[in-house]
Length: 324
Image (cartoon, rainbow, N blue to C red; front, side):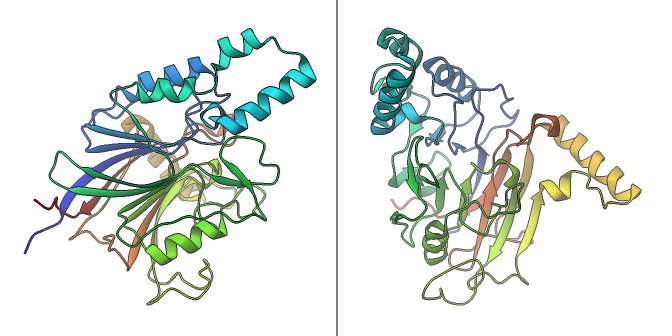
């Protein structure tokens, strides 16, 4: 019987053109879940690409986020028109800072070390002998939908995730999983959750809701419900939280011993530069297609600067071998 292949991923999101340290270990695949930039300026894209080149990975996959609006030509045209109307910005200044329509996309497409994924399913044969099938989407719901790759909350968006997909890469989270905001609201997308709950991949990684940083192994109930939601389709008793900001940062209700433990953990992660977790066959909580999915919110920039950085993730999962 052909065995699945252990595959290591480096996952991060929401770097917003700020500096971050590439991991000092080799990985099979690096994934950036969007918001490479803060204001979608060409210099920000160049800085982010330079840092991604420092990751020791033969395959580097990137999607856009809402802040990367110049990768969304229609959104860029709308914002450029509005900026010119309100502020009479010189078109030459706009082009110098943000590039012309399509320039940011060309910059990423011309980089040999990085693959920018459009929405849809993509297939890769990895150098470790594994086969990887990815579904990617940069789209997120928004009340205003005035940034890149956004749709209004009341609009439908078709996340066409099939059951053969190993990894889902989106900018935003699914509703109900690692998506709670500082105001205790769920910032994720219900349509995305329903699509993931039907497909049940090995891994779903995202960012966007910065305060939702963390990882959780979700165990699924036997069969998807007619209208999947985090209330109906997750077996909470069998699901396991790997780490969240609540388990990593001291809270006001923590006793002195818990505070010391959390401070020690934060110190170790700061020194190491990433949070590592493994979910392969033989591990305590393996990801099993159709039965359990590892969800990772990899937003590395905190909601508030005084909270300090949030580490990227190094994740091990099994993948099927390439069929020769």
